[in-house]
Image 1 (tube, rainbow, N blue to C red):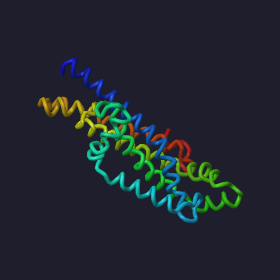
Image 2: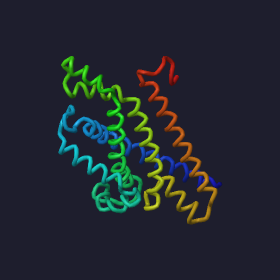
Image 3: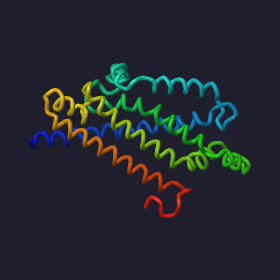
Image 4: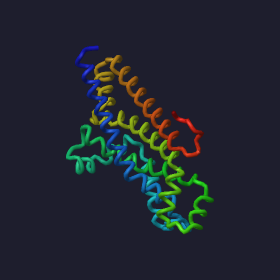
Amino acid sequence: MSANLINLLIEATGQTLYMVAIATLIGTALGLPLGVFLATSQRGELLSAPWVNKVLGLVVNATRSIPFIILVVAIIPFTRLLAGTSIGTTAAIVPLTIAAVPFIARLVENAIREVDEGLIEAARAMGATPLQIIRKVLIAEALPAITLGLTLAVVSLIGYSAMVGAVGGEGLGDLGIRYGYQRFMPEVMAVVVVILIVLVQLVQSVGERIAARVDKRAPKGRGQ
């Protein structure tokens, strides 16, 4: 493999990491509070707002039901409005983020719903406000599961980032398509696949280690 291709692989890996990192940060910033609200806003819950919960739930489900590659194409005008272009690394962040927000929201919602109801009732009995219960009980107890959920989201975004290469999104997917497929260079495609596998394994390992460290129920020394 030539030095030029090695440089292209390094550049494409950096582009993929950039896309995934920004989409994860924005997706978490929007998806985390959305997930908390979905988990606490049904009738009789801490932030009871059943109609708002139902509407947001429908929007989240509708967004998640759209195949990612179709989503990328469908929101091209919106992507162009935000990024000034519909191709390139920065433009690819828009569909990646839109896909990440509802996914993360549902993961966070499920994690919070697994928290023991008894802890919530105990906090209420001690006079804690709904926001205090959410911050100090629900999020604190669900943090390991939320961490694993975010790990899953990052892994999914790595896969999605490869898909945007099909529509000019740059990164490893774009490199694999342009060189590995269109120019009949299977060695490039093989290296791209290996890099993607390594990235996923690293993310999964780091995520599991962080989840073990923040798990208050874990035996002492776990995750070391």
